[in-house]
Each structure stands twice: as structure tokens, then as C-alpha cells.
Image (cartoon, rainbow, N blue to C red; front, side, top):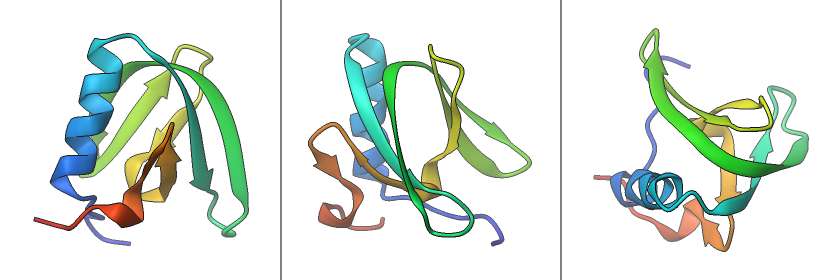
Length: 81
């Protein structure tokens, strides 16, 4: 996938969760579309090779375009900008 995008408002939600240091449950799909659930606080949001990621304090690094939900925020509820 080239330059995958996520909705801007969803990214803003992730930033707010990170700034408030809230513990959050992240559900994401791996490359085989298997859902995985991880918990922690977001330590960082960063871009590497044109792909955006989040890093949890538990050590998990998750590509943002693979996230299904963060806490009670479902990515499908947001529009792309």
C-alpha cells in the first residue's frame, strides 16, 4: 500500500489520547487481516517511510492505517479529509 491515509479527525483523537496519557485499547488488523488487541498509553505518533505509526508504552508499534479502533473511537466513524 502506497502512502496509506487515515481520517484527519481520527488522527486528532489519537493525538488527544497521547497528550492526556490515557490508557487505551487499540484494535488493529495485521497484514493477514487478523484482528489484534493491545493495551497501553501512546508514547509517540511518528512517520517512517511515508507511513504513520503509533508506539505504545508496552512496546507495540502499530501502523495507523491498520487501526480499527482506539478506545471507543472507531475509524469507520470518521471521514477522510
